[in-house]
Length: 199
Image 1 (tube, one colour):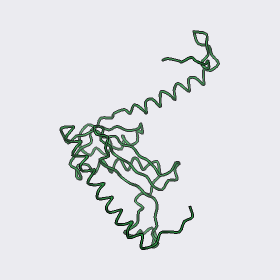
Image 2 (image 1 turned 60 degrees about the vertical axis):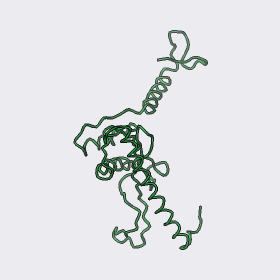
Image 3 (image 1 turned 180 degrees about the vertical axis):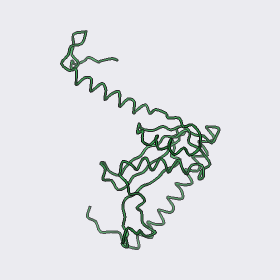
Image 4 (image 1 turned 45 degrees about the vertical axis):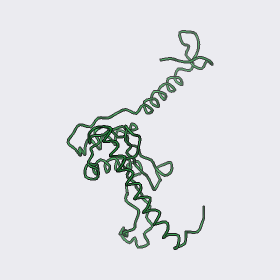
């Protein structure tokens, strides 16, 4: 937007706001973990994992991976990634202590690394184990968890209904485009109006 950077006075308030928000966020996640373990009746809980990036395409500098409890629907863990570096003293890739850059790989690899980081710290940080994994169909994330094997227990992969719907919908549209000129047994084509194809 071509705006000037905020003044130094405003930066103090930004840091105060950041610290307060971070404290509240971590406290909330701890409460949500306790709620999820209470509902499950054990420290083995089911989570849904998904990654998001700041903008479309593979050039996004920032991304986040969130772990949501399947039972409560509340965020219980997250991992933020940034490729953005504002270090004025970055000589020979030597970053300062306040550098926000914590990732250097491809944008598509952020989700895999985030999922791995969330699983690695679950036992030490919260005293819980994620034994059921609900993902969006990205097999690389689940494969990385199987390779990591953080708890020496079996991980169960749950299927996301929305992702299955998307795959079936794509299959039906492909079938329709390939067979649009053919007639069905009822004498109508797939392009006929007011006619639904049932499988």
